[in-house]
Image 1 (cartoon, rainbow, N blue to C red):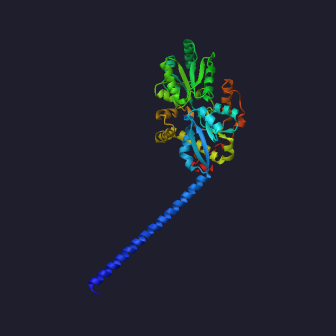
Image 2: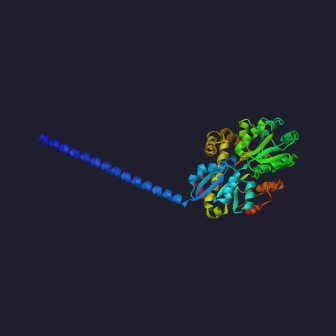
Image 3: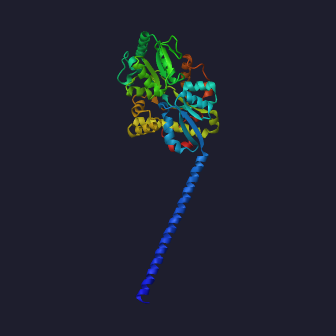
Length: 402
């Protein structure tokens, strides 16, 4: 064979080998593609199966510091749930939340305790299953009322002494009319706290206009409360409000007025007074108990997360702020951090299990102040099956197994 034939033979063999190599490579890639597709299909099937096996649990809330633990639980832990397909719906005010919970097929809600008790009187088809927080509201005054007060510079030193009561007496005598004090709702823990403070200092309060009392409690939406103080001051009228955090702090950080005192110093109770509570429909409790247990466990752990973050400060607290602002952008970073100030401790997310005696204190005071029409049977209202007993070190990745 001459050299030309040999060269042609070698070229043919080389080309054949190259084709074989490419063929093997494409075959390998094709096999890899099939395997990956199979794995993705299996993973999708497992995920789909997991989603199908979860039950939807829908909860209502109003954007307040009262409900920060619910927000943190939703953002941090819902992906770990085995039983609950958890969703949140923010309501613009308490009356809409009440109406939606009582008329629609809603599973859970975070509600102020007097309002929840009044709802229970109307339609006793839900139960109290835990707390959302303890303490957590404050009374703020506008610039006109401040002229008659001498508040300490540091908020930690502002206590429910006679200073505000004296200012209210002076302005009531001068203006010959009731001082307006805004509440998030007349059926609120805030109204109960205000009644307790005024009674202790010899002042009277009414929920209805044209009555011979020192103070008229009116409904002012939390987000509107800073503007309420400012508009009253612009007309040279005294005004105050008692609202959940962070709205009192927003008033102070934005210069509309000052915080006069915090509710924890008025309704002094071991661990902090009862405020917002968690309620669940009887149907949800009967049909979705594992899912609700999962969510309540997450809320307790989220409360611990918030407490840990406020202790640590820095990046841990910044992360909590970011989570909150994702759902409540109107809450400024400064106001959130002021509300969670570790030195003030004016709201806490500890010990969120049912507190029968703590709720009874709120109920009895509300009935005495004619805020609630009558008492309810608290033992019938309470359902203890979702109580949380794990220690602080509880592994939050195992929420579904708790």
